[in-house]
Image 1: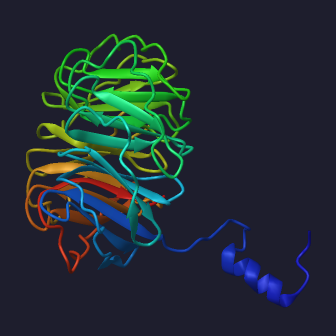
Image 2 (image 1 turned 180 degrees about the vertical axis):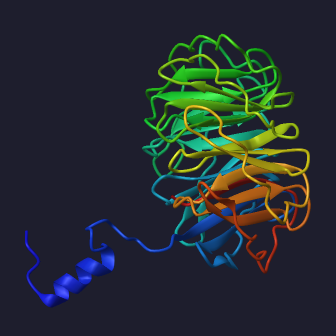
Length: 353
């Protein structure tokens, strides 16, 4: 259909560049951080190039200590994995917290460590402390009846969980060999995939699929601290380690790919607390550290949906540090802290999509 008038032409070029490419302008959305101490979850408006807006009001029903946080793909729900019963809390979200959804009828069996929605938003998975270590539910504006446990359980505490971008696989990391367990997923667990031929060397805390689903990264608590494998309905041969390793143990939520898959971030216990590498079916040379480092042990990390910012949750105040990010260049000058800080140790971060 042609452009019929000058006003329509102006409207077109407001949304698209002269080349016809969509030009959405700066990302404007929300950033959530799960943390220790009430309210245990803090959410702020976020604008690329500007930074933190005002913190949203706390939910009327608070979770326990926040360990992990995830927005649903449609931005209509925010879920928090936490340390006290019911171990997972989900709230309606619309530029602020709505009423907490009813707890699932069968709770996760212990301290919630990780939480993720499937890419279609129809399922939610929780990694947790006690057997069966991973629990998944249908999701439709509330928890459905718990799916049957996988026939082969993960090897101990579920520390983090991630769905593949196509929703066909579900990964969980844990403290005992093989440290990473992946299942086919189709509204329920399939038969566990074979372990990678080269296992991560120790307890794994972080896991992330690349945006194209072609790779899976595992963060763990001994050298080389990060292991990445090709993924195609099963593990390929482990990629070579980066030439400059992360400087310490990787924590829950401590591995993140940029939205375009061109970079991979690792947060860790030891200074500089965050290490980022170019990624192209293998590690490139580590980017220079940010000029202002996070102020303590790096916990979770996340890139903004436009790839223009990288956020790090960390042990000590201000508990969250966010930097401009340019692939190929690296970190910009740290954004100003939010006017109302999270109330305790930052554990995990998510942006609305």
